[in-house]
Length: 155
Image (cartoon, rainbow, N blue to C red; front, side, top):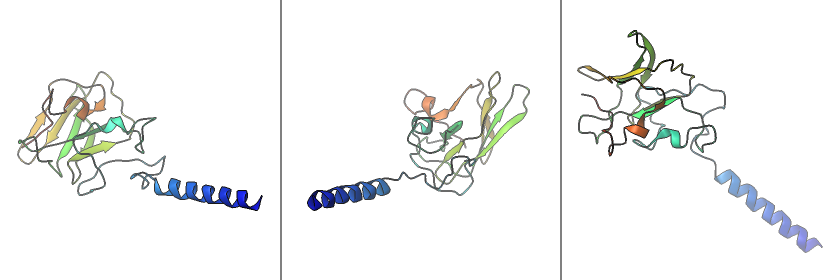
């Protein structure tokens, strides 16, 4: 009987160690904390991939992103850091401003009122480039994957 209890304790200990070792990379966020990209931050990852694959209600990434994507230089290969993403309403009023981090990524979990759609733009070093079509969701890299639609880029 003592032998079975020792095995049970050993198995339980190994399970606890395994679970502690499997924490994801996002433990620096609290569940109710606003998550937003900032110039110079380098905590983001998976540049160019669809952030919404993981950062959704049931996804493996912490935080449900409302807007997320990656900005590239004109070569559409090199991530473009420390530029600004803006989303305008139809009245050309800036509704949202996001800073692009050191990995070229921008993201937030703030609630967004998409209304009749918002018009994204990227403010690079020399000019602001606006998308002429409105969008109704913030999964930017889902469309701008570099294969079916060019990546988001600026100069």
